[in-house]
Structure formats: C-alpha cells, structure tokens
Length: 331
Image 1 (tube, rainbow, N blue to C red):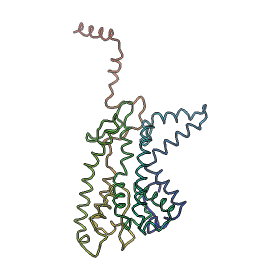
Image 2 (image 1 turned 180 degrees about the vertical axis):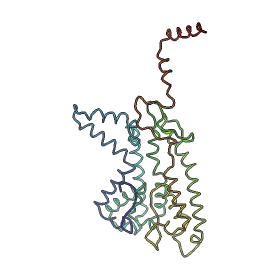
Image 3 (image 1 turned 30 degrees about the vertical axis):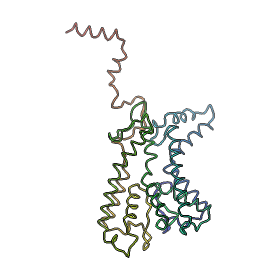
Image 4 (image 1 turned 90 degrees about the vertical axis):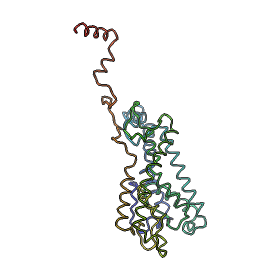
C-alpha cells in the first residue's frame, strides 16, 4: 500500500476486507502517506520535530532550514502555503469521492450491504485507492455508473495536485529548478493563472494519448465489443482501463468470467497498448532536465554570469574608467 502498487494476494482485491476496520484504517493511511499526502506529512513531521527539539539542540538549525528552504533540499518538500493548498485540494477531492460513493449507491446492494460506519470507511479507502493504489473494496463493475465515471476522472487527475505543487514551487532564489517545455510555462506569480494554464496544457495534450489508446484497443477488440453475449466488453470499460493505465492507478471494472482485470481478456496487441499507456502516463509532464532540488551556494546555473563579469561588476566606477583609459592609451 505504501508503495502504491495495488498488488494483493486475494482474488477480489480488498473486497474481502471491506468490513475489517483496523486493516482498512492502516492501509488507508499508508495509501495517503505513500503518495498524495506524502509532502504534507513530511512537512508536518519536520515541523513537529522542530517544535519539540530543545532550543540548544543541533537539530533546530537543519530543521528550520528545511522549513524555510524546502525546495532547495527535496523535490517533494514544499513551502507552507503550497503545502496547505495541496492538503485542501486533496481533502476536497477525497471528500467528494466518498460522498458520491455513499449517496449514489444508497440502494445498491454492492455497497449498502455494509453498515454506515464500515461503508464510509470502505468508501474512504476506495477514494484513496483511486489515486494510485489501485485496490478496491467494492465490485467496481456493479457500482453506480456515475461513481465509475467519477473514479475515472479522479484517476486522470491523480497526478495534478502534486505536479502543480512542484511546478508552483519550482524556483530557488528566482531561478528555475527545472527546464520545462514552453507550453508548460505560466505566470508563477499568480497561482490561479498558473494552475489554470497547467490544467489547459494537460487537457489539450494528454487526452490525445488516451484517445489514441482507446481507439487502438477498440480496433483490436472490435469483435468482443460487438458481441451481444459479452456485455462486459464495451467502450466505457475500455476507456476506464486505458485511463487507469495512463494514470498508473490499476483500477479495473473487471470481467465476470475471470478474476483478473479487464485487460487480461485483451488480445496481445491490446495488452501492448495498455503497457505503452502506462509508460507514457508515468513520464507525462517531466522537465527536460533534472530538478535541481539540491543546489549548493557555489554552484552556478546557466543564466549565471561568469566569474570575470562578477568581479568586473564589483569594481568601482573610477577603477573601470581608469582601466578603459589605460586600454585606449596602449592602442
């Protein structure tokens, strides 16, 4: 769970444990701590250690340095304001996800077979799993279609909160920590405009890969899709599968005849397309160069002036004037 892989030894993922309170609590925390809430919990841990450390302790200065210059030291450690924004976004997304699962499936026996308390906990676990973990406490093929669509959207935007936080804090002493393509640029001084620009770039760029993947799989699996006796094969379950692969989540609506994901019933070509979607989705939005989260004071960036120009700028005007006069006389 903490690695957000989604592997389980049980054939029905976590449906067997949907009423087990303690395991679900632990695994929900691990799912959040291992990915989406990792920057929040990391800063909380550092802040807590800085508060409980004695005043004369040698740990206070390093901890305060981490809190004051987080992106200089670690890629996933953000300043206070972006961390609070990230927490607010994650809380809102998970709250909406849990609310939809509870409300839209009030009369669904696939969900309301649980008491209210375990149902809320199972919905919270499912909400956490819809980002990266890929495990399920409900039979996703039997839940409300609106819930399926909401999970699809959550899988697609799973990378956005942390990615936008990384981009928004992508400066160190007014220099960029990573070189991104021009289409990713935005006005970082205006968070609202920057987030909107990033979302527009993602929606206009990433969706092409998803559409191409769905199109290729529909061609490869056309006979199964057109088979009226095989209702599990349809365009939406394939769309769900491709988005899950592109977001590196691992959720699937499954197939009633097997215990594997729906892609287990694909042809070899369809499985190759799913693998390509996973690889492309894993590398979306990366900078052209490594993020320089660690930069020593004596390191120079590309935009820095050479040492000679630095010394020249520090010379008084009189000295520079005498140097120019001497140079003209020698000529």
